Image 1 (cartoon, rainbow, N blue to C red):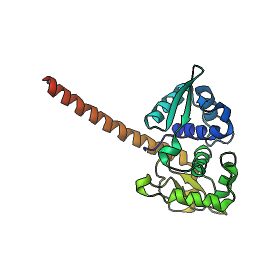
Image 2: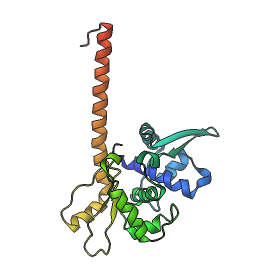
Image 3: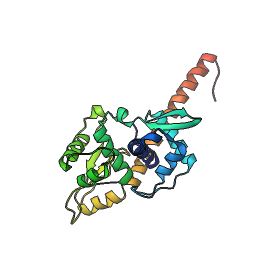
Image 4: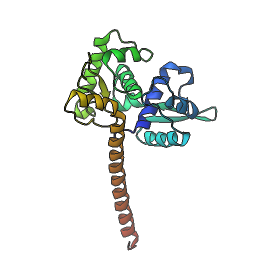
Length: 222
């Protein structure tokens, strides 16, 4: 799976969240999804995405099998397929959704924030799933979270997701603190680079197919 953009990440986080908090309305309509993306509470950063932006991001997510589209009552509805694609249990999915929606968190903060998605018995249980997500082997897609260096004066280290691509290396606790603030921007840059590479490969493939077809038809391309 390629790194996802901040908006794609927000959409996935909202779908996971609303699956549990408004189960009667799930899968979500486009309007409900846009409202969830632009929600002012429990979101970091706050976004102001339009319907066209969300639709374009949904198309990209559908191409990655991360979102499934269905029709109901003449309204298109959307649900996530994240757990199946990432091959993670519901506990890990709850952690990833909160990190995607709220940014870097400590294990204690994650336990409180995931309460409506999954009720962890204690902080050590959260830490266990975080350790599993951080230690994933390459054949399973590699790590999905990373532990940030503890900032100056902080009692606990925070964790960040890696769904937007690898985080840049840091050399000090101050740099780690700055990283946690700028994680979204870093993820967006990584996603743009990944998309550029993806599109470049697609163009090369299409060019190859075009030349093969021209050769079969006896047409000389300029």
